Length: 474
Image (cartoon, rainbow, N blue to C red; front, top):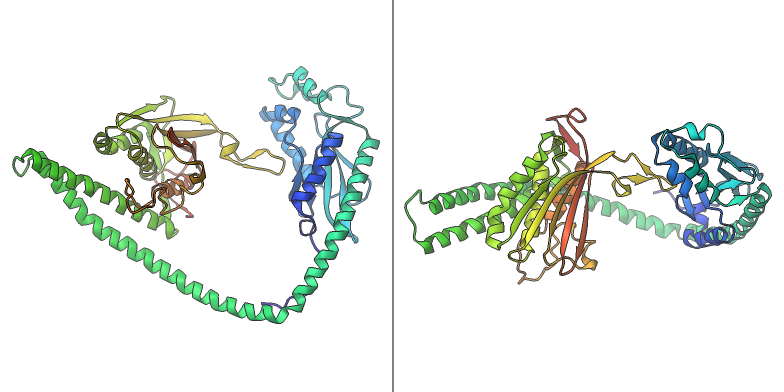
């Protein structure tokens, strides 16, 4: 590694504490009721004092105005003010943004953006706004804009000057600390070089560990396959014995054979989970997309889980919306994912309870897509396939929700736990759903039950690659 040299230049994010600086900006917002955003020199949002204003939220409800709003936000985000004078960008709705640079020692570090605000001369909607969309109500939009704080240019200048004065003090103090730290780093250069050498040795060990992990994954897949093959035969012969193909059995003998089959099914499920996860862990997860009847897929999943549900005394109920279309999915992986959710619900449900499985198509929400710096959803799917599995079982403690999707995790990890398994089911569900571009959500209260919801972007026939293999990173 290269020697450490003092670096006198620092970015805005290096020189400010975002939490403390955010409190300063929020105090300005509370005082003047004008939203404040601070961007660094790369256009990254560092501080934002408010959420979307009501007129902006209203305009984003209409496709024709939503795209215009995106253009305005992009202009604000990409603008680079270079002079101390305020620069203004105006939205087609008449609202405005004022911005000024943040500079230190002749270096442009970022910018402050005030707004959206209502200019002092804005008393009515600009011409043409009311005609942008047939569903847009000018009266409603006008009322929402009138709720936005009216600010004059002179007031904006005073607010901006006050903010820049505070920022100058913060930057001066932070820059001194930054230089001191850089000089200290340079003084321990020799120690750093020794550490670099140790790091190189650790990297070599790490490469050996990765090679070992690959061997382990291959060995695990081979062993699991060799176990599954004879186990499938054991389960098959148990079925034949139970059906009396090899001769009638006494009732006690049937119970023994039934136990053998149940334990064989349980062990086969564990082995299948290990095989599925070894494929994910090795980074070779491939989606085989095909046009899929979702309701039929769920019925097949329920049929596979009916025997264990009967043994538990639990009833499975399916409710599929008739409007759910045939979709481009990997049916095997979605079947496995839903199967794990149903199996978990059966394990943790009380006898005589009902597990509800449902499927429907719903509009996407902010939970289904990423957001831009101003809090708007980007690239969200127009519709989502929602598959829910709801039980009234033991539920999950609040503190456990964060780790239930981690591999090899059992909430009851004692040696005397009631329910078996390798702790891979929910990890597999998460990977398979995310490979389809979806997400898994869970709501649960201890003692009241849980609801796991799978949401996958809708891709109907013709929108994907039917029957093709799509690699997905694990």
